[in-house]
Length: 601
Image (tube, rainbow, N blue to C red):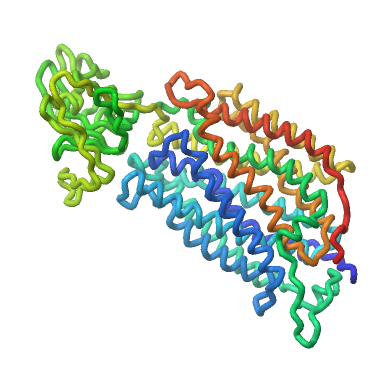
């Protein structure tokens, strides 16, 4: 087996440069997807479930891409064809995902559409990302692998910084708020720009990287060339390779389990956590259905005849009563704040309470603006809830789909189920849940700041990667990095200043640097080139499986913690859980025993 020659810095750079564009897409996904789903109207307890699809697709795609690329030889190369397919698919999906709430779909339909787009986005990102890890294994000798993966880590984190800060930079030029259920233009254009950069990076990679022909690759990796008579090349099954995998494959995999579960919770809950903990985002009460005589009927839409009573978790307002006089109103402005918008409660200072008997509003006296007309208030004003008109003999309907086909307030219902006729003495109440108001300025500002914090994390990871390469005892550096990251996660609970949170995320960056560089360096040193792509694809399971398990458990774990003072779930506790997971991973680092070149055949 010939020894691979040393490569110049710029050749090492070119091997990984495309990772810059791929990581922008990945950063936008990790920092903005939960924000997108929350803005559409997802329940915080369901957020982790949405993150099952990305690692699940990675679990399926990465091993297939790795194994297939080990056997691929064509005019485009060995690994690069998969980069092209993955990058092009990512670019297309990035143009659709942020528009999930702007297509005129209901909340449930928009969430389903977003989930499908997320599934395709993560699948394509995984397909585009995997070739860069394999190219380092293909081209770089053992002496330069540490440097090569450090360059890859730098470009990875540089791309992350661009993706993370894009929304807050765009907020200088574009609106950072949008109608309820729609994603702000800052997020949408961040995805568009990220897609354009990914396209340019893919073109650059193809222009600068020329893969080895089969005979040269075989000479450098100690692989016997296929006989001239075209005899069938021996193929090792994935299960067989797993059985023969070096022990380090499994010991590093255990550490990976705790690390990736920790960061899955950060990506899922970080925006909500800082919105509530540091930005004071207001909460809202969403209607989830009704309870009639002790039996609950849960849905997003509630009708009484043809009149819409509840839409997308918001109860419709019948109007406002001023000094005893009933005024049917679509918009009421109180002291500069909008109380009602299109018949739904929308109040910047908190929740506009609605009850069948009405509720007091913020202007007991003075003047309020009702549908553009100033109305004097002498004795007081109160809201009038739509259910105040439900009387004995009326029939309510729950509707899965509601459409305003002509834009005139006439809703067409589909897939309806009727509740019993309301009789005298029946008890009818609304079912509520309290969540953060994702349409509020505070929440969207927190979403932008979350990107800044993740950018700080990425910059810290770049700096720490340089420090990490100087550790002579690799396991010590690996374990120390995870412990520092654990401290960063836990510290978020005690910090309420957006600026000071930057310190916490910088500490998390130390763990992120180690997670990106250490596992692949340790593993590839234990492998020869014969099945390196397959092994790296299989090793990706140690990234995907823990995220799937963490996503399945996220809602249940969040339910174990008390609600916040605003009545919404305290998602900041999930970052504390992340810190505990990282600390456990740091302990398991000491179970790793590094080896070199165990698979020589």
